[in-house]
Length: 303
Ligand code: SIN
Image (cartoon, rainbow, N blue to C red; front, top):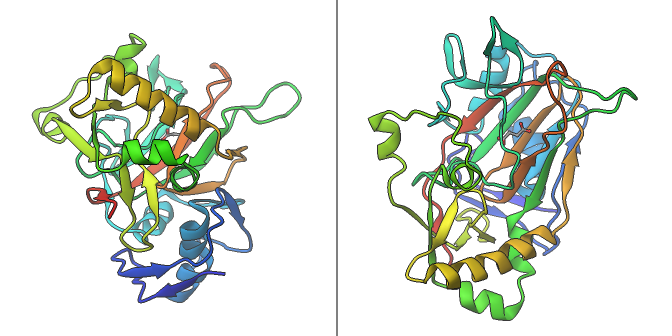
């Protein structure tokens, strides 16, 4: 088991000790009702530490108002309005609708949330620490099986299982990230219009390829095929070849596939994971989730 040291559970962490080397991804927390008050110690034991250990957790069977979901999200830190999406809830700019539902012929939310492996917001200098999703409507096939799974992989286990030669090549280097990289590559920029403020947060973003969690000391890989343009100082050819090796290695990691039910909350440590939103449903099959984004700092380069 793991042990927490001086952990301020409201988000301003100091140090968390995670003994043992086994990295798991995905864990279901049982017996917690998020609509009821949770003391700081209950939050730490039952919610926060399982995330430290498993990077992704699910809490099923919840019945929350938007205010209760926001209050729960605030336990992890300051919530931010997503830097790109205009699809926010009326009166609650920190809640983003992910949805393919249309009202008056207009999407009520973002219909294509991310059908590509990515870590959220790596195209900003301060990618978020946590993301939370709460499911309102989930599509099903004719046999009653859920569609629109969300899949996760650990960037910590990816680092820890890197072959030595690859680890050597990645040590001390940085990569450039850009928000429209994947969409540009696939010719789908979704008509995204950015304000000056939004653009300013996304200019010339460079992150170390190997980063380290200050609280646990664990290292993780911080490149993803959706937003990473290339390695700083390398030719495009050299960079693409190296990044492809890294992506193949990340793809060989264990995958946690979350099969959604209405009332599920899924929370992930954003920098410690990559995720993929499966797009195997089309309207009139309806999918609707609320999403919260918890502010984070710049990723730390590994020692
Ligand atoms: C996301 O990529 O942040 C959303 C994942 C999902 O809709 O399943």
